[in-house]
Image 1: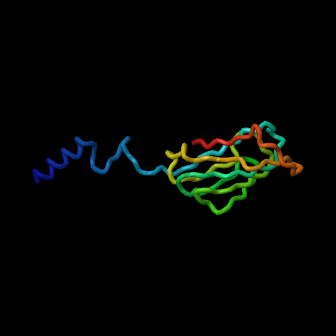
Image 2: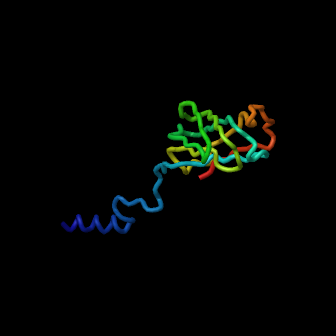
Image 3: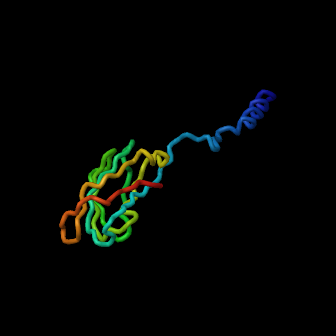
Length: 130
């Protein structure tokens, strides 16, 4: 019995049995936001873009008032988003580990006006953030 008490004291002194506190190193699943910067806020009707990252995406949700169409989710996924595009969130994406946010990249491939005319990509950018 004295041995058990001794081990219990050692475990408590080292931070508690089964406790990981601030030193946890496991993945933290969650969502990231893909945001658009556009020189034509409110005057764009569709965007085609891709998102790449270290692990396959787990979900996608369109931003408010938008519709999203996606390929099967993987480490490189193409999206088409339609609706009135403004500066701000176009989609949220589910990821296995939000701590890897810096490893996710979103790339604009095409933008169209509401009349389906393709726009120059100058001035368009996407960011991925938590």
